[in-house]
Image 1 (cartoon, one colour):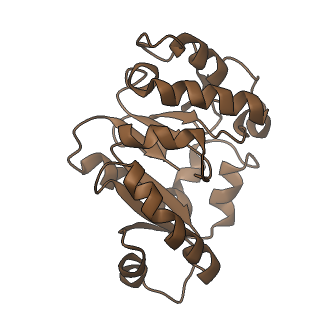
Image 2 (cartoon, helix red, strand yellow; image 1 turned 180 degrees about the vertical axis):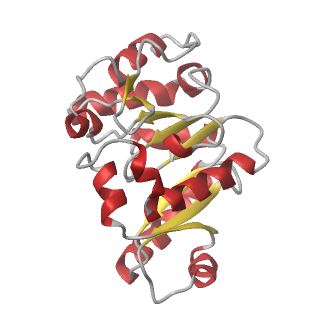
Length: 223
């Protein structure tokens, strides 16, 4: 979604406390990345600009990649969460954070209050929706009011309005199962042709919706 942000790609930050995958998936080096950003933000001084921390993905946008080691990743995310304004706000006009699974006691939970939009990605099967139903109230309390929406992946016997009504959060996007689009995002394909896939087009629509929404600030968080 960061790659498809209107006018100019957003900056992607891989802030999954369970460990990053982008460096290994796309053949990037382990640094610069999230560890260096955390070191710069550790004392709470604003970090201005992302040039010292980014690498470019073959898909055509910049990313601050997380370390593959879960202990390192969790430590770095905890630093960002302690100073979200200083660590993230001034990196780029629009920042998209991948927070991984928002499990109980995840250090990434403390980033939610700073987010203008939180997109929760889920499969619309009964077991996944039930897990989200039980988890969503805590996430809604952690985030600012009205900023959480859902992106459902694949087909469901429930309509988006039914899912929204049962879970108490709007469905912002339906993401198709698309092996070509998934191939690009998992490193099996490179280049910009992936934006024309069904998944790429669905993500482009979602990015456009988020960009057009009246938001007070420019920090966008995606989980």
